[in-house]
Image (cartoon, rainbow, N blue to C red; front, top):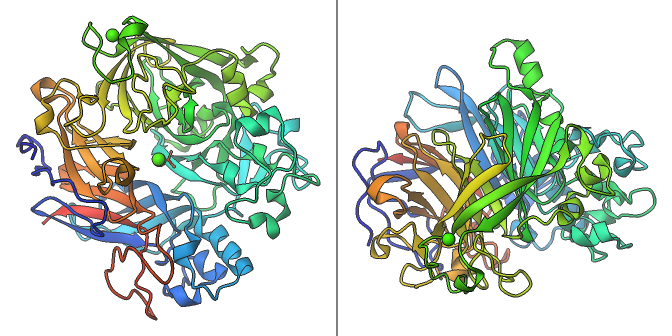
Length: 591
Ligand code: FEO
Ligand code: CA
Ligand code: CA
Ligand code: CA
């Protein structure tokens, strides 16, 4: 069992022991308690009916909290007593959500309202007291029917026009919203990740194949009701209008959310923005696919730190114009020393330098034979032509708030060492447990050169293939499949996982990782989520003794009749007898 954390933090805890994957509980350290802030089906908008799983309708779901919460942030107002909770709803689990009597058409109409995003008004009695959800002026549901403006260099172009939108500038909805980030100007970014699964695409092209669009029926079957999800009859390009970073203003429920073509189109995990030394803003982004790439965007214009509406208006334009780069990593060690086992090379580190290779620069395409519009809509095809490094599924990529170093979660890659050759940045064959890379910009945030090293090779610490920045392995918690990352006010890295049941036989969890001094590399498990769930969206308010996580897809391998999870109510929930799981945002507080 790992040693206790340093007492210098306001969030002291004794790490929890690993929790077997069969356990249907939210497990927190001694001295902490948890409560759901909001659950699937709870009211978001005025007039929302009480959650009744046996009488679900699309009209009710459109007013209620959606399914499968992923990214979250808690944005307190200056008073500290009110605020907004912003949440992604990545997808839905029809098999456990709906009674078998509910017909396919009605299911499809409900799941369309269960995905997207929620903006939830929150309040509390005192700073440090638990937050609770309420309904207020800023409350909002964003669904697959909400209008989004396409902005940036590709907006209005031929690749983005459909029979429904000959302008190529207005899209209904957002899909597959996975991770995200809050910008310095107070908006929220959300990544459209697995959008391909929502479309059926009868005619294959190089682009549709590269993005995983296929002729198979979609996962939701929305195409049976809504022709735009079938790529035919004028809707051939509808899928070109998804796969972006979207930006919403959670303070203004009447604002039109936007999709940023300047940040490229791929399976965006999320985006995290910082202000560079030259005041341009830099967004770091991962493309979550085996063998896909790490990207960054650098704005043309500079951040305006004024507080008036003029400054805010300018900052809202920052992600619409700029340069897009993709990363190429080089190692310091001979290839023969990267043998796939995870054993450190002779120089003692998986490390090296790297380059940000421009795809667009100064408004021009840097990719031979492709226009700017083609680069930004078919970004994977463009990147393939400039030889970036194929990574082990880039998930969250986030700059540290004080050191500026960038942390890249690479969740796993079963094809490493076979389809994707080993390299020093992705050094393990079949990379089952994933790793975390630490990247240091060498010419400032907007520059093109970086240094990198592997911080963690995740897995069972008893395995010789793991590495925890040199920290003694007998003192760390097992960790596998890093997905989301966050930082606390003391500068520690926090990692949530997605996939431990399949790799370690353990429930997924949330882990604190020390980055500095003699404890660098110490991984300590803070919590574990219920059966089948992944841990998402960690937010660490350590100064208030509080941690937030989104519990996504609890009990997803069950059925309506045989539920595997009863999280978070652990008893009948609402009217009727439903005792199945409800994905929820949870706050953990010191008891
Ligand atoms: Fe939706 Fe890459 O996790
Ligand atoms: Ca090396
Ligand atoms: Ca994720
Ligand atoms: Ca994931």
